[in-house]
Image (cartoon, rainbow, N blue to C red):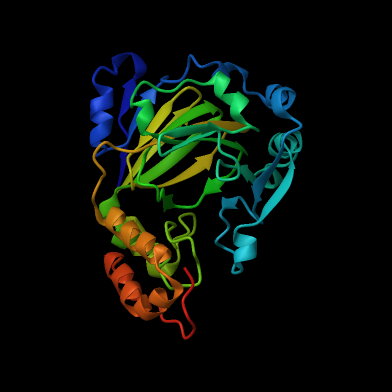
Amino acid sequence: MTLEVERLEAGKSEGLATRLESGDRPLIIVGGAAHWRAVSSWTPQYLEQRLGTVELDYKVSSSHVHPDFRQTEPKKMFARSRGTFAELLRKLSLGPEAERARFLFTGDEQFLLRRRDGVTVKSPLLGPLLLDVELPPLFSEQQLYTVWSWFSGRGVRTWLHYDNNGCHNLNAQITGHKQCWLYAPDELPRLHPFLLGGPNPAHNCSQIDVERPQPEFAADLSAARAWHAELAAGDLLFIPAWWFHTFTHHGEFNSNVNFWWKPLEPRWNLVAARQALLDAAARASLEDRAQAAPILRALDAAACGASAPTRPAEPKY
């Protein structure tokens, strides 16, 4: 079952901050960023002129999916390359679509801004891009956690996942066109994330290849209620904390800016509880992890409605 995400015109946003704080449904704010300078100026040529010599890392896939979990080796799943921003922009905007879709830049390679323990830090490399965007007046600046930029060509698919930082996410479509499918946290058992103790460390990602679902997962994916959103340049998509989501990138050149902020009252649901378990496991000492591994794996599997993976060797987290 697929539902359409509600669309709200930017001029009808009275009381919207309070609504987003409750964070129980995704929402599109149509034209909410249309007046930003970035929406009218972020072409590959403009960005190359501004920051073309900046050196950065970016993702490389053997196909159009990111991360490329169709591969069996972690090195290939999470492959990266490095070059100048100008070189990346040319890879994204020139050549056959299948080749352009192999490359993706996201903020985990280089953030725009982040705020931790009351201290705000702007990226010394990409920070100038912040001059072209605005902080949406939908949450307090003190709640801000991270601001990322995304750059891609046509054809990219981001793998189904949830953000593991416990933040709400406001995704501003700057240029291009994207579609998104979202799933509420209570769909966790149907979405089969990679389990603790298994060989894949991306525990916030689903095992399901949504473009060609594996036979053992197809029925659950079909039964899960999805919310569909379509974004044009200048739109804002609100993704509530802990919701699963996957994007397809349809513009010839797509750029986005994401704002993550901490809810005043943290959300508590199946995904939040599971992530608390994963975070506790990551903080444990090696000795404690080894001793508690069977229990932790069983708890994670129970939360996800699955059987715990078994491994003869000591698990890695």
